Image (cartoon, rainbow, N blue to C red; front, side, top):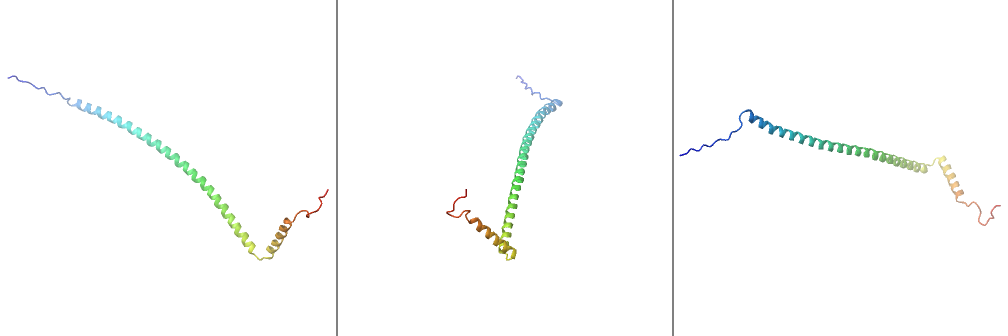
Length: 123
């Protein structure tokens, strides 16, 4: 009988195994590094845009707040003026009564025509 010898494949031994493992790990590490750089760039861009949008929103809130405050101030001033005039008109103080008579007289004068009907124009 002939003897067939089967050769076992030679596997790298010792430092060679570690070197191959280190090469595959270093390729993985480089890929992982670039992946994290890419993800951090995307996150930075997103944070920049979000920050910019929040800043614009804050400016709009301030502008509309100022406008709303001015409208509220005008409304309060107008309502207080209205209440003050209503109270003044309800007053029976002699000065107020005299002012009412004078205002009534001026209104009557304003309603009169400047010329009498049928009069001749002045030359």
